[in-house]
Amino acid sequence: MMNGNKSPVIEVRHLIKNFGKVEVLMDIDFKTYPGDVICVIGSSGSGKSTLLRCINLLETPTGGDILFNGKNIMDRKTSVTDYRAKVGMVFQQFNLFNNMTVLQNCMTGQIKVLKRSKKEAEETAMKYLTQVGMDPYINAKPHQISGGQKQRVAIARALAMEPEVLLFDEPTSALDPEMVGEVLEVMRELVENGLTMIIVTHEMAFARDVSTRVVFMDKGVIAEEDTPEIIFNNPTNPRTREFLARFMHDQD
Amino acid sequence: MVIPVFLAGTDKTFWEWVVFLIQNNYMDFIKGAGRTLLIAAVGTILGCIIGFLVGIVQTIPLEPQDNIIKKIILKIVRAIMSSYVEIFRGTPMIVQAIVIYYGSLQMFGIDMTAMTAGFVVVSINTGAYMAESVRGGIDSIDVGQTEAAKAIGMTHFQTMLSIILPQALRNILPQIGNNLIINIKDTAVLNVISVNELFFTAKTLNGMYYNAFPVYFIACVVYFIMTFTCSRILRWYEKKIDGPDSYTLAGTGHTGVPVKKRPAGMTMQLMNRKYNEQRSAMR
Image (cartoon, rainbow over all chains, first blue to last red; front, side, top):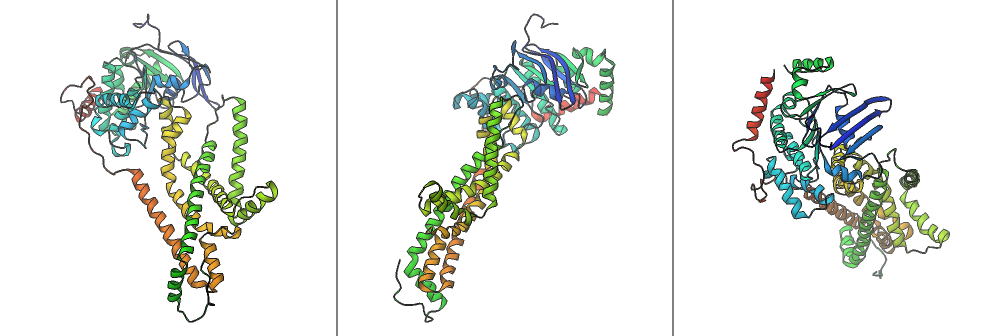
């Protein structure tokens, strides 16, 4: 592996998550190195989103460990909020703060969590809003802009915290087809800038183009994990092959 | 109060009575209305504060990994708060007024004025109703808002204060207005502990002139002016919170922070088109 000599940013060890008696994640092992772009693919209900939500502790894992730069965040002594400030998240449903304008959305976390000054927060927010092309809309409220625009603001909000890792939970699944491209293009630019990302997605073309590694999940386990070339052209696991065949078929 | 030098007679028509009362006793009505407004306003504000405190405590999430002491304390506090809400919603305010006013002196030796008792009764009554409204208001906010706030590292307290409560407050503002209007009217029951509010004033004047209709008619009009004004003010305030319907497009690039620019001419429309072409190519 090309990142073999670096230490992982996020390391998931034997992660287990149960909802009641339903086992959603079974013994997940998984490493993310700096600069990695990992796309997690798989059918609905395979545990992709749950894995992502466990990584930033929106779901409490039932068992296992999650290490961030070698530090176990499941340990009671580590501050969950400090950790979350370093691991950004972009949601399927955008989840912009409805009581704030676009600019305030990107500033509040910096001021409240990172304790930045208002001026610094505004400059940083403007920097990233410009990057996602939403700087003309700083005065708009979330209900006044389109889905694609909301998601771009959500990305800027996450970037404004200057996280070490950014998690994407199906960022384009709630969008009208004509708005998917603008969000993927913004994400592509982030890849070029070298941001470490874990992306749960159904956009196979995007996953094939940008990822350094692709993780295929099936029924709560990682069924296959490899480079995009191998996953998309020559998968070893028959379940991967079946999923991709069915997925491509559904697209037509 | 002006002492009448005559007994109420039939020598005046209804409107003459109204004019007479306004000329002679306008200060009594104004003072009564003032006390009514004061009790209603203070009661609503304190009631909202109580309601928010109770509502917030009722919605603190209990995680399985929280320590046992926190769990026990929270459960006890919640039990007390639930009983408070049930008891004060479940008994008439007129009875509560008497029980609190006379009871506090007899049981605890607290000798408060009727006015103080009035503030207390209206506040805790409003608080009991508001607690449920606040809980509903908080529950109605999409869980995604909380998750987004947590995902950028906010604590439960910060999330509540800057994300959830402002939205919950906006949602329950009509109910706060409702409560204020109900309080303006319901302070009338405080006449049983002889709080000198508008209804008590009318009752006193009726006792002086033995002519109920014009006296209570004026009281009625004054009550309506107060409630109508309040409802308009609240409506205006709701609109103000919502902000303008449109937004202004800001001038671009005024931060002076160097940013990696996307290639010129790479508009969002172009990105969307590029994506669709790629998708078709994938098939």
